[in-house]
Length: 329
Image (cartoon, rainbow, N blue to C red):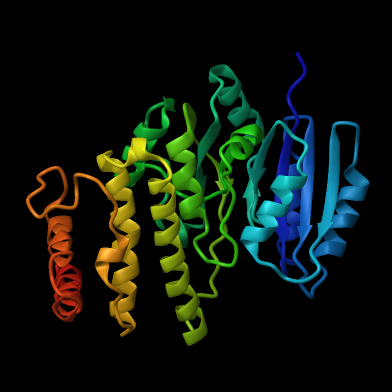
């Protein structure tokens, strides 16, 4: 039986020094057929010229490509969504244009997916020595997990959240309306959270098949800080929307733990950058884990739950104190 078509979605924006290596790693894949989708997110260097020249020379019956042009720069989320909508493959994956994949990445992932009818696969990654300890590695030793078991592993730091390193059934995304929230950073988080809630089976490929290139441009300007904090707020709201849309998950402790992780991060960044805190009560949902004496949750989160019972004038001071105490610990 013929292999199913896999679409590789590559957003491109000012990566002329890396796009050649990225595309070489795609062209060297042992798996066929492939559809390469390049999204021009309107950079101002020669990335697109390099990409189109390489793909024109490489095109075959089993290796096709599509070039899509945004009218102006829309960012990574929208570029990935554009590629998803226009893809023709039964399966798709996201590849950042400064990264690379091992030649057997697609073949190994598809073997695991097809053997189990999994909704998507996750592989491990590697980076340069300086940045290979950044976290997010695949540390779970199981070969297959259901979505809620994977969420438990995610809460323990055994599975990474990134959109890259995964091959996904296209219909799984469309059937469950799983797309990236536009115009935010860390857009992978609510996207992956919903993937885990909806997945019936996930294939885990233990090999490091994705090369992640760390972005060294880490200087945080005030504009970047404001965007990061606004993104954190949007992510919390999106998590809450996903949870409230599915009554069957509200009383799952791992849902609560995943949600509290992003909620605490949002409030922590507000405190760290001296921003005013919103009312914590706005961010609760109807579940069994919001009480002060709930033994099903970590003690630190029980301290957070106390904040829900305080008047707003005391709540901000209280939350600031427990955030700073946690930082000291």
